[in-house]
Image (cartoon, rainbow, N blue to C red; front, side, top):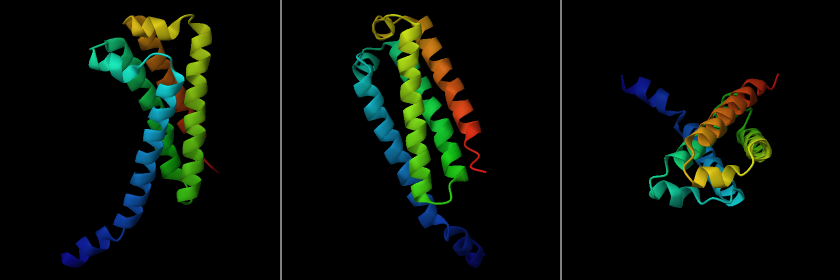
Length: 138
């Protein structure tokens, strides 16, 4: 029994490394995204702005999906970091494209317009799914 647990725990260093990289990339994504957007998401969320929470949450999921793909398919930590950065760039470009499609998008989210936030969240998740599916690396 103990030998089985010991064998299972041999993967713990790799788990911790990939999890640490994933958390670091996620924090970097949140930092870049919230600096890029003119609305102050965390302030708005503290003020109970559901639209800000929906838009940011959907964007975060849209980033996490391809990050999952990067972790699953990476041949090493550096490979994972590089593809995680690709996912970050794609999600940032998604928001910039959405700003072109929906005029006044940041202001609409700041005003609590749920329809705009739902569109941002849905678009971010859809792009994240496509991004993740494209990360086959083969």
